[in-house]
Amino acid sequence: MSDHDDFGAFLVGFLVGGLSGAITALLLAPQSGEETRTMIKDRSIELRDQASATVEESIDKAEKAANDAIKKAETLLEQAKTKAAEVAEQGQVVLEDTKAKAAKTVKSATKGDKGEASTKA
Image (tube, rainbow, N blue to C red; front, side, top):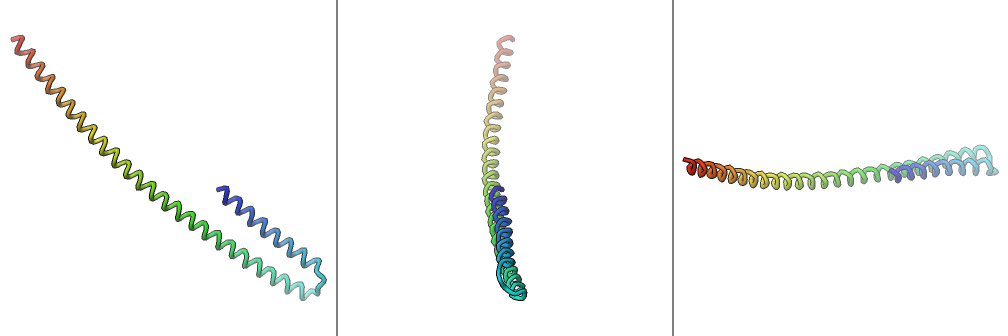
């Protein structure tokens, strides 16, 4: 975000500096009105072209940054999916182990109850 603000400030400074320089040069130049108007027209065309080039560069940079962000987001999404699958698999293994231990405990408890019942009889 800071880069965007710095670039915006640079662009504004560039345009203001260019315009003020052009106006100063035109007002202080010893030429006729026709020559001054021609110079103003030419200078305004140059400034328009420079502004168009700057805008195109900005758009290209923004598109590149957006594409990079999309690629990074896709990579992170794939990593998250992979990690989620690993965690789910580990959870399934833990669940199966817990079930096996519980079944073993129930089985040994049931055997213990039968053993106590036969010794009491």
